[in-house]
Image 1 (tube, one colour):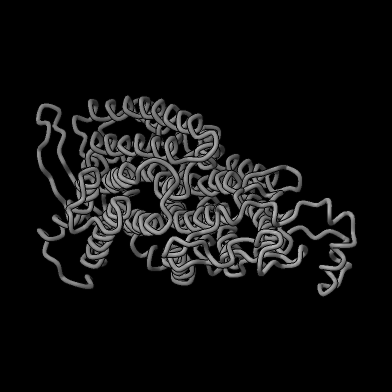
Image 2 (cartoon, one colour):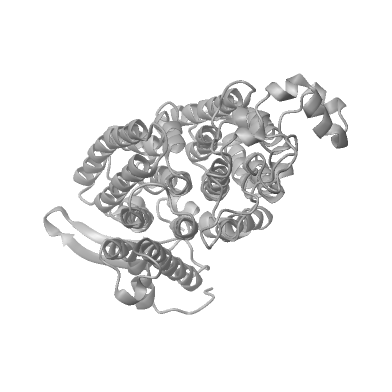
Length: 587
């Protein structure tokens, strides 16, 4: 069934357009804007160009999804096959099925929302020209990774995103950005070198780099020893990008230093490239090798789940000086552990759970990084102790809509039933309860129990974050005091005078700008003695959710609810494709 009947040639064109258009848009972004499109200034023109290109790609991806034959999601559609390097039998092969289509949609949506957000709030740093061009190159490489059907092309697309992300962190990032960018590029490049060796081994031993043909062969043309070596080599490269514990240490630094848009794209789409490679390449092409390493992969996955949660708990405790962006980064290590656990089960239930958790993580963590970026802009810091201890009523009292949305994203991240985060984790644990034939059931049930314990730890640190950031610290003194006497008490109590006040936080400087470039009306306290001065102990209001923020964040919140209430939309796409993949290309 297709919503709209679109011819095969048009579908081919749409998929090629989706992959190539951002690359062409990146080149155009570096050229001078035509006189009629310059707008108020060249910076505004290039940012508008980014919104236009990413918007066109999103529309093309949606049309592609509408024309997709949902009755046959296991069949590769919109396929293109052009000879590129005949000597190596490398071909330009594109195609989508029920596994890759949701990831294409997620990538196109998040990149468009990032461009829309950046148009109203440009990142602090060099000229926006290079910023827009890098984001578009990043989008093209990510979309190509999910659309190509040739192993060497997959590797090239996989590597294409590294340089843009390096410069986004190094040029537009915050403190320690140079060190974080170097750590990111070194980890991922070293992993990629090993991955290339594994890809070449498969191609040379099987005689082809065609991913569809290799998946249909299901490893029959490769000896068990070749499969084991290939899984080890390719798996290391994919595990670095995922990231899997203990190859994760680049991620917290990269997220902490990256600009808001960089963090959203890194968590929302780049991490998905690693897990997609496990599903698309290793599971169908080297099943015997995967079966050998599956218990180890599952063990590393559950260690990552618990480790990420414990790291978040350590950062969330009072006095730890934990950075909220760093905490969300460590939470990604735990969430991606669930994805890897589902893949390691080698069952349709587990792999479907992994793919669902992938999409849910992209939506929820993308929203969380948007929110943390907005909080940092308003307060001038993402330090949890500062946010919780020096802000009086905190977000609920100062920016209630922003606080409510942060609480919503946090409970979605902890896997509350009815929201997107629940289904992926549940299906992954179900898959671990009954793993594929040949895998140790007692071992995987142990992994399931550890993973279930990790969900409790996730709930613990997320609720602590909501309590501290949204409600603020509750001292015994403030609990005994009636709200109406707070101002007089603050003036009479020496302890209140010594405590850091909300006015000490650089808000006016970092408050969001309105469309006309002026500071938001409630961006911070008035200077002492100025007209309209509030009493010293009154909690100053912050600018709540702005129009451009609502435009960028609402789709992510709505899809989080939709995926939680109607999971069949996504599972109906992935399940037939996963069944075929695990059966060696046989539906």
